[in-house]
Image 1 (tube, rainbow, N blue to C red):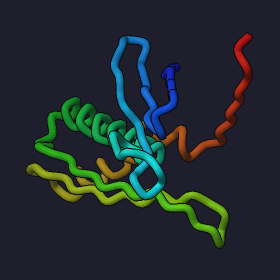
Image 2 (tube, helix red, strand yellow):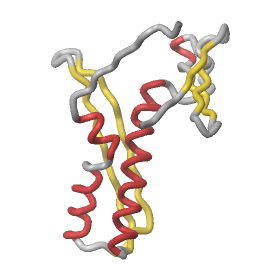
Image 3 (cartoon, rainbow, N blue to C red):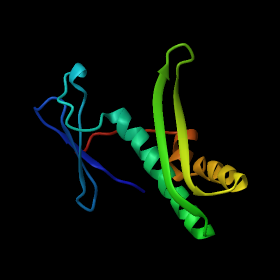
Image 4 (tube, helix red, strand yellow):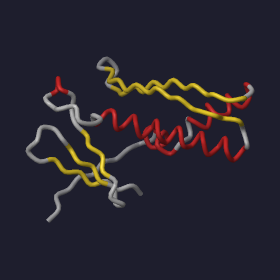
Length: 132
C-alpha cells in the first residue's frame, strides 16, 4: 500500500506531499490556473507515476533477462475527452540499446503490465472520510 500525506495552507495552490519516509514533493497549479507553477500539477503527478513505474518495470525486466537496454524514454499525455466522457492516456516510448524486434515487442508488453498501469486500467474506488 502507498500512503501520502498532503497539506495546503493559504498560499494558492502550493501543496506539500510527504511520503512516510519523509520525501517531500511540491505540487502546484500553473500560473494560468492561479497557482505559482512551483511544482507538478496534480494531472502531471498522475502521469509521472505511470511514467516512473513503467520505466522502472522495464529496467527491472531487461536487467533480469540480461538484455542490452541502455535507456528508456517515455512521453505520456493525459487528456480528457468531453465527447466520450473519459480520460485518455497516450504514451510514446523510445528504447535504446542492442535489442531485436522480439525483445522490443516483449518490452512493450511488459510496459503495459507495470503496477500503476494495472491500477489505472482496472476499477478504482475512492473513499474519503473526515478524521475525528
